[in-house]
Length: 235
Image (cartoon, rainbow, N blue to C red; front, side):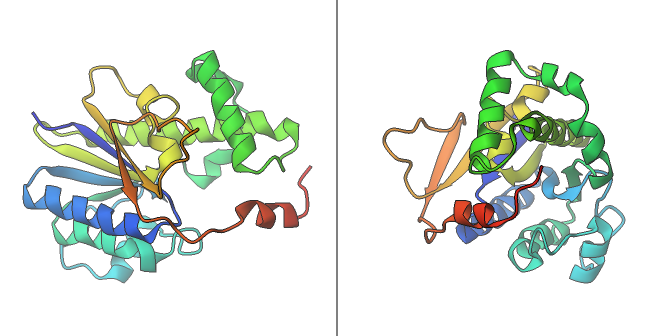
């Protein structure tokens, strides 16, 4: 029996990961086992159903309401179009922007993770923003992450088809077993998690909670924290 749901995690700044994503899409499509491609890069409610396999890139971008500023089409277009050309629907799974503010205030989302996982998720939000966020924003930002994971999980469940695999492409933080989407899927779902890692992890860091880790060439070093700290603080 094929995996029902395959979560493929990426680093957004690693171009090699887009090449591998396209290869996975084409491999599953050639085997006629790809039910749908769900992407973090488009909002839930957007999809390419109704478009023919020879649809233009412009038609696909319009159908997905693609945000090129956030997700450069030059990078992600080949992955998306590989699914379209194979006649496989591409489906947005991210929480719609209009729902983000409400999610940040929804305290019941705190209960969707075990206490230890919630604490780790909050710490990841803190570290991911290089300790620049005011403490009062940590809990709301964590709720937004949980809401996004739940939206992606619900989309994946909706796209399941017997004997086929739904493939998700999202950032590594969304796919890991211990913090991300798998926590919002039923135990009966056959889920596999692959995390792509640019460069070897330092020896003192644990491996991601995944079924497999694909190590790719390192990306050029960048100081993301310097950029964040250069921005005016948000109260």
